[in-house]
View (cartoon, helix red, strand yellow):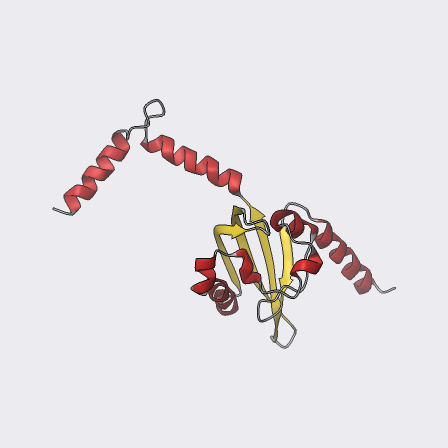
Length: 161
């Protein structure tokens, strides 16, 4: 067995065993062609339920209708990578805040083979950041805007005079 073959096997095993990140491959048209354990845990689909389907189903209906999934692939095509955050949807319809990276995969002749997609559920971090942002602007006891919020809104009011 060659060293390259052993490396390929070890790499495949590594990707399949990662549990905290959804890691999967898309064909050039956005069809799911591989699925790891982390993807199953994050999104709720077994590999035989999702392989062969368009990855856009993880986006909201409004995002699907406005072409966001295809636009994200287009950004990855132009720059080599797309990175962003947003709501993603599970098989059961629940949603989670995700950090997403889409990388292009090309061969030695620079022909597009597809995309590698990595998704991480960062809902807890977002909730903490949202809470900190809220606390910076509102009184925790009364829920009323504090001075920071008051002066920001006052500045906006002056702007519209």
